Image (cartoon, rainbow over all chains, first blue to last red; front, side):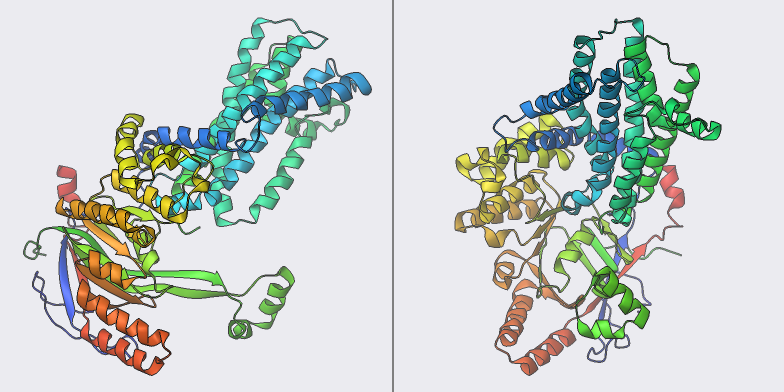
Length: 308
Length: 298
């Protein structure tokens, strides 16, 4: 198109036909002042972006709450299931491992060991799988409202965290109530620290997975394979010392962040052992690195989610 | 470069040469035949359909001014809804840009509200999604309920609503944000007469407030009645842009002939309409490099 004379009056120039049936049409030139208008799309700088996510915190909270409540709204007992489910899970483990099998597999307080492993590991896998689905599942929201898209994976993690609170209470109650009863030591105060690092880890994973899955939906299948592999590599049901004697492999297992989360929590709640500074350092490094990587990776894809 | 004369004031939205393409699976046997042999074998093994590129929008340019209500008419698949999503900034075009004075708000009939929640809870969620804080959302609630006018159904889960009722509630929520630029996708067609009147009042009020409204509709009649200007899209191209009555009349006459099977006549009408139309060229100034300095000075 050529429109030589700048100005605001409609002017007529001819352009070559674009398709065979289309004859030349007059062109009306409109001058637009860029200082008065802003582009409607585009990715803001990272610091602004984080600010926008923070501005939508009420939406994130309301969406997370609505999904938690919506998940049980068709049931007669409603939200009571958020508590009943983990209680039943715990009861199953109690009946099978403490009453029927009496199998401790060489582990002190195997029931406590197992409950901590299963409940905490489930929290992370739920955040990972729900976070991965969040952008694809929120496509209608993305197509209707303009908000920073990171609100969706964040809301998925918040939702899982809300559901995790009753699970955590059940876990602590079972450990305190079922023999062998473990004495409460000052080390119990370390547990919230480990959980905070675990939540950072979860959020980082959710953000990474959300963008990756929105680009390649096939990854959801690989994620479920990965979580199963991770489950066996994190000493959830068994003590790794009995199976692994290869030094390099042992090193790798001990660098696994989920293994460290479980190890710190078990040492603090069950065994009265102070977790080593080294394990805190490794876990913190994982959590910060994954959260930063997840945030930057998700933010860089901000414009791609609408057409997912 | 010396900037041209000051532009005519009141430009709210400038759509500058937008191109959109989708890659989509196609079960068309013609498409299947064009694929290479290994590609066909692979597709069959994986149970996939071959993909084709669909040109949803091919070079759309237009400018909307304060106080205008622009109806967008066209057949299904002509790119109407895509154009709205692009203007709303919800989707990224392949080429081109959209500039707007304020953030446009899109109101789609299939806007995502959560079916398990009651209307009341959805109102709150929708308000928060548009960026209100909880106090503003609570303040807006009464207005929204009044505009929607769905009575006690506001306390029932949204999955029990008729399509008309949820469309009314969604319109009311979007209007509550008091957007200066409102984009409406087929919402009014589903309301009853009483709601239509109320929503038209609201649209008039928005326009009087120096905003502008885009309305996508299959029903050229509702565009004729509620809009000041109409844009006719066909296969992602702009056929005509002008006074609502003229464009909508031509569109209806063409669509009527098409529906009656008078394809030759319809094709001639489309040609005529295209020739009577004009193209818009958007000149943005100052150019991005030229405004670097004033921006920093601010």
